[in-house]
Length: 149
Image (cartoon, rainbow, N blue to C red; front, side):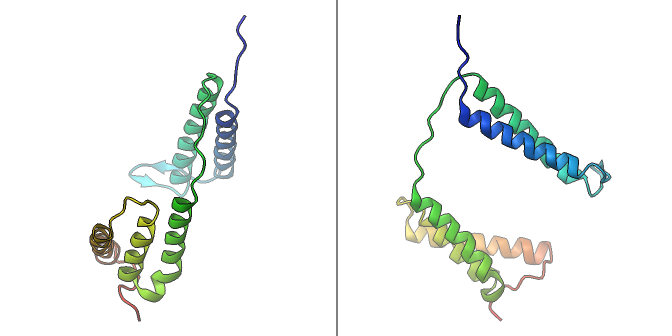
């Protein structure tokens, strides 16, 4: 007789995702969905909720298999660097403009690993900033300042 072993981390995560998806599906039940060519206000919430439900069921099934995978310890450097990068972008995008804020964001996020080379990071930051400006300001015509006011 074999005993079923559960990987509680996966089971609990799967149950949480299923519960969130079920709540979102319930909350958006009255919104019209439409179809891909003519999306209603409930289309994207329903798509995201169904994807979340799928991931939740996947984690539940994986947790019930009994194969326990250990999770690596959290490293503070990448966590803090990415959080700082997101925070700096949020606080500086309107005041410093998209160009400078996105360069600062990429450079700060690059501090997450010791493998980052400053010259390569700067080149990537400038390229990404130019592409972001092209996409958000020129193509999408969003009212985001490019440079400081």
